Every structure is written in C-alpha cells, then in structure tokens.
Image (cartoon, rainbow, N blue to C red; front, side):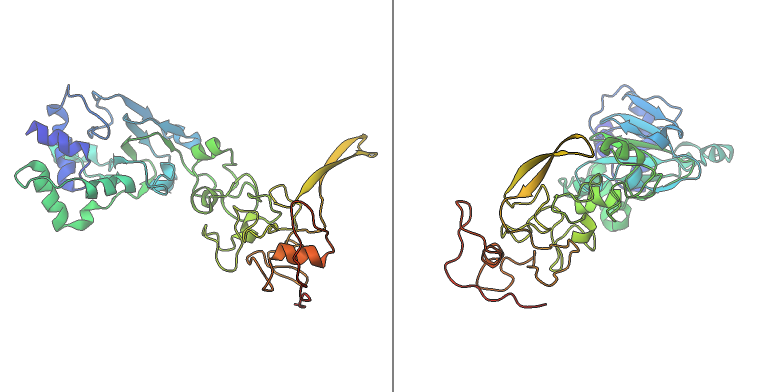
Length: 364
C-alpha cells in the first residue's frame, strides 16, 4: 500500500480523493526519500523530509525564486487577487514546466475547533501547471487493481476533476508548491501579466505596464508577440512593434509586417525607410566634426539611391511607396530592382539592374 501511495503522490493526481490520500500519508511517509514532483502536502507548521522553504507575504512583493524539487510554502499579500499563472511566472505560456500545489482554505483552525479530524480538517484547493496536467494525461494507464487504477477511474468518471482548481490566488492565502524547475514568483504591481520578480529578471519597469512605450504591454511582449519589451522597435527597421503587429497576437497577418524581421517580404528592401540598423540596405559610417557638440560624430548612411519601402514609417502603403508585405508590388519585377531603376541607380557588384524596361509607378 505504501508503494502505491508514494507513486500516486509523485504524479500529483488531480482528484479530491488524491488530496485526502496526500494529507493522510504525511505521518506514514516520514523518513521516505522523495524525487521530482513527489513532495507531499503538509500543514505550514509541519516540517518535511524534503527541504522546505517559507516565504512571507512581504517577500511576494519584490518576489522570490522557487527552486526545483523543494517544498515551498508562501503567503499571498493582503489586498491582492492574482492569477496563478502570473504569480508563478507565467509558466503555462511555454507549457514546459511541471508544478503542482495546494492553497489552504484558512478554515483549518475552525475545522479543528468544530471537532473535525484527519482529512476533514483540510478543505483547500489544488493547482497544477498545464505541463503537469498534460503529463498526467499521457502517462501509462495503471491496472485497476492498484490505488492508481482506482483514482484513474474516478478521474475518467469526472473529467472536470483534472482541472487546476485554484486558478486565482486570493489575499492572505497560504499555499504550497513543488516544481520541476525554478519559478520566479511575485505579485504583479502594474497589471501587465509579468510579475515583479520576472520584471526584475527581464529588466522592465514593474510600475509601468509598457516599459518601452511601444503600445504592447510587457507581458504580451514576453509571452505573445516575442518582441523586446525594452525596445520599441525590436527588429530595428524603423517601425514600432505595435505599428507592425497591429493586433498584438504574435502572428504576421496579411495586413501587417513582421515585428521580428526587418525585411518581411525578403525583397532586399527594409520594411521602414532603409536607414535602420537592422535593414539590409548597404550602408557605411560617415564621420564628421559636430561644431555644436565639439566632438566627432558618426552616422550610418545608405550607399545606394535605393531606400526602404515604408518611407514615412507609418505602416501604410502611400503614394510612391512599395509594399513591404509584397516581393513585387507592381508585378513582373521585384521591388528592389524596381526602385533601383526608378531612382537611377547603376549596377554594382552587389545588385544587378534588370535588362527590361520597368513600368511607370502607378499613383495611389
């Protein structure tokens, strides 16, 4: 029986029946060596064989790191209501980190006073990362004769039991967690879905939901668009990230350019006006003495008459501009060659001008 209980705890079974078994097993398992995600649920006052760390509500403001394979007990600060995903670092977004835990209800003392004993004292809620729930679903099915088989049959009969119940961490609650990897835990002061500890690690401002002021929140840049929350123009093409990814969903739609690639249509012309440091146009450094500053200043200058596509950098295709989303805006010739001939460029070793005449650029 002992073997089955340890095995059940290792996989953090997602049913209330498992919760009861976890609590009841505390005394029985004393002295047993545990492994990844095999920690058992205990009251905050009780020590465990696996290393235990305690973090107060005050620590949750600046944040703390939850080490892997360590029992961690923490308290949610007062006047805070925060999603589990955000408090524990947004780890469901990458779906790779397995963790599970339990939030005490706060009724334990009252339950004891009311005469409840054993398992009935604990009436809190479990929580699980998405990766942990997936691991539960994918693990081999146990035999019906074992304890895991009984719990599994109950899960199948009640699929909702597999859900992570404590999706919101409430003010003043004490919770327990064990993780397979380090978690940056903290509250989220500015409400941008990037908690304070993770903002510290990234370098963003925990009091400003949009540190680089590009119109995309810090959390969205980290988890969704994958752009740089510290730079308004991630690909250095002269166009702000929000200008390129208008709906901020991380995909390059038909009406958008990529916020991660300076030349979205790969035609050799920058999405912006061509002068950005990420643009493919050929450039050279030109240095001069600035009389006002009294010092030598160097600037990047284009070496050909061919500039980028969105010349006024407004993320719209205007008169005299080629489309940064299309390799050949006007058909029959790619945009770089079109502009090379139109602007009177001469062939050079890097580019070859077309041998056929180009049409007049239509007015828009």
